[in-house]
Image (cartoon, rainbow, N blue to C red):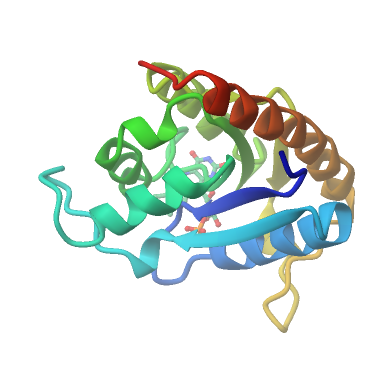
Length: 188
Ligand SMILES: Cc1cc2nc3c(=O)[nH]c(=O)nc-3n(C[C@H](O)[C@H](O)[C@H](O)COP(=O)(O)O)c2cc1C
């Protein structure tokens, strides 16, 4: 079994004036510096996908399911909205079921004083219901909007060590669960 693994990074904010894309770009840069070349990254931007809110399938649902299915681990990049996470992110999570099973999930969160941590705590039980494993280490970026420079680049040096810790945990789970799913298919 190769050590190379696949990471899907889901950009959970679809707001027109969002900073979520800058946060995701920052995280992907950290991944490339920390884990390259062992990890292959697929950025799944929910703003680029049509996932019907009636959960009836169609649109990009199949494509989204395939991309989550292919991933050995998923990182959800989420802002905090009213102590929760964005509605379109919940629609995306609920749109596919089996591809989440026995997958490790990490979080990169951002917001005001909480750094998005309350969004993460609401996401953990959602993923538990989907038989996914959320890793303990979380990246939080408080007042992220203040850390975006004039070129739209997030400068968050203090979050780099948290990202490395989260990636370390995710790497272990990604390989362990991939090998386990290969040995014995997971039945939810
Ligand atoms: C509808 C809405 C609700 C928000 N509620 C919170 C909140 O409860 N806690 C917090 O820390 N920040 C809150 N914020 C601030 C956001 O976390 C911040 O604007 C962030 O940049 C939003 O991510 P985005 O720009 O990628 O959409 C809220 C922002 C919006 C738009």
